[in-house]
Image 1 (cartoon, rainbow, N blue to C red):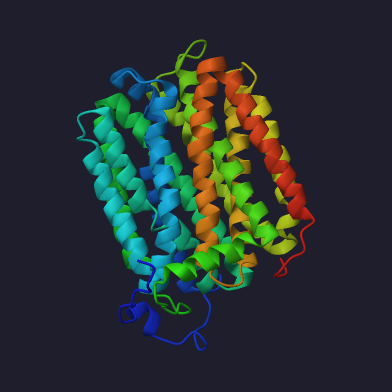
Image 2 (image 1 turned 30 degrees about the vertical axis):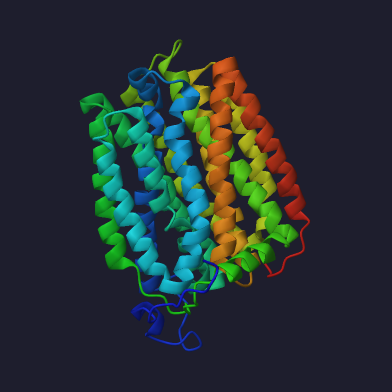
Length: 418
């Protein structure tokens, strides 16, 4: 099991030109536009498929007679499975190529989502969602590695921001469309409709993504994989970035997991469709990741990250107020700051890791999605114990720790200028 597995013949994407001769993809070129359209669609598919269950969690609680914390397993289980499997998926992409792994991931996970709509009970639904998380693992870490390898460093922050914009758009569409379809035809129609959207996005991704030019296939060796992970974990800066990902995603997902419960209940008593429309605040995340990513290319990540985290705490404070306007404004601020901070930290990982970037990205995303799973379930227990105040304490504690990590990163000596 620990013996290296012989790699197949190099895929066409790895043999069309040698890395030394190949130009990098730069902003302003046709290749840059195609690449970013492809990753926009991939981000839409991946995160619509993953997060479409969030507005349905109160429905699952009622229909399957489960607690809010148990209902959150519809998201926590696939994110945990995805986090673990990304560690292997990134290594697999080193052997067979970036694009093939990403294509299988997007197409197969979309088909599984359609199948989820037909599951008869809570146990089978959760089981299939876990399988979906395993399949989804093939895209996020590999996408980050593709951008780090193929896009010129002076354009990589902007490109990463655009990819994360696609993630934000996918998260928004998954929640908004699910809420509207739920109101119209029930949760099964909502889940199936999102699966169809994922299949359409997967086709566009397949057609638009250019082949790799700077990728060189390597034999799949588990021993080498462990060595790469250990190499990255010895880097103090990367460890802080991995912690940052855990805390950021844990905080953000917890807010969105339980805000539906709050808005459906008195004194707001909003409908499922209206709660779904509240999630259009995701649009500010689409703008923030690109905007903050562009600023990072100019001013440096360490100068921006801690400021964005302070603003995110301010958004959480707004959400503690009773006014519906203040709550929605707070959601918008938290969303804007989360995607901005994620754009900074994720692109920082790609810049700091000088070798085995796919493994560095997968470690960051492992921590990122484990934050979603662990803090997300903790938030459900806090909701059951203390309502929204309990959720606020959990999220606030995570964000304060994230701020400590951000201040530590601000003093970090760069490995690569930026």
